[in-house]
Image (cartoon, rainbow over all chains, first blue to last red; front, side):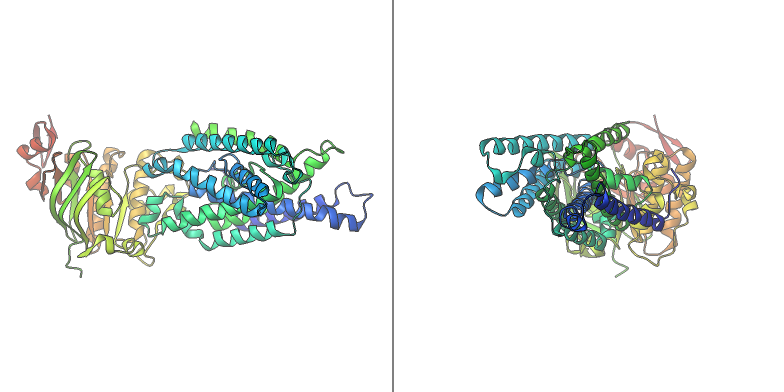
Length: 310
Length: 244
């Protein structure tokens, strides 16, 4: 076991890093820009990046407990893909983008839970099977999203890159994502001990007196709404939900309360920095932020998966 | 209330697919008793322990009462103060520390803290559960049940990963745990008849066709009944028996 820092030190670290990231992102490359332009153009984008990052990290944490799998991530398991399809369908029908994304994410999450039910109930190690089922769901929803985009070349729909990879370049956010992340954090912190016990397994938690069915439903709904909000703001950005909670776990954080707060801060920081990188690395062109996250996250995922299988 | 049996079954029947595991089980577990379930592989010991813990089993009929109250009427939070259950395999997915795991398992706070040295796990507290050996993890699982604070403990094969010295330690620990409070009782399962003779006061044998035998360890652990239970011959070895 690596030596671990105290929770207070980790909190200070995470808070400092996120404030620094936001300041750097606001100021970066802005020598010629005036204050007004920074506040009206760049601040909403940084706010959106921070909110989406926090939402995805908390959604990842929720899915990991729900599926008892530290490798769970909304993008890898198709929850984000379901949100993309739901949002596209909602747009075509003229309904609310956010509601469509939320319902799509919920449906994808429920489908995964249903498919993984026997493996989860039997208690045997379902990790590789669960991840494979989720990856196939993600591929399926990606195909559906592509099909919808091909069939309806409509300007309202935004580009394929947004829906399949994730992109913050046109993000319009008035703080809804940050507020949503704060709500989800509060809900997770409130149920901290119960969620900790869910990590021992559903039956073990039930024997300890936890209302397992209700907790599962709450985790599913919370994660799905968070993914819906994140996807309708920034598209299907991947791996934030995997990398951030896992990094804190490796740093020795075990309690859900601590893990949720630190993951929200870490997710916000990570996506703000990733967005900054996506703007700077090939300036004046912009990379989609989802591509930057995948460049970082996919290797992490592979390393964790290979280590876990050993 | 406390004179009520901790567990009472009336006509309990369990089955899996088409197989009858146990039928017409009329049986009681009273405070102070240490029961061991014995029988061949796949005879239904784990299923019976699951049913006694109030967990889902493939097929089930008949009555199960905890302290005289039908098991289904116990709210989950109340049930947690009555019975603890240890599965055969822990199935850890997250690298929680042993200390954290034991903190999470406490249901009734205020009970006397468990002496980790009594299960030889005092050094393991900061370690991650995923890094323990099978035997270490199993003793931690027994400790999890103990810190829960419930008077009834259901242990599915508590010594299957223990070396000889730790088998003796667990047997003595079980006896001491039940003796420490007058309300306590223990139901476990094992394949080691020598260990059963040391650790248990009573045995419930499942014969594999629905029939069962219950009694004190000296009653059930006899050459002819062991032959009927396991289908092999047995030789006496001191106060216990060895399979031929």
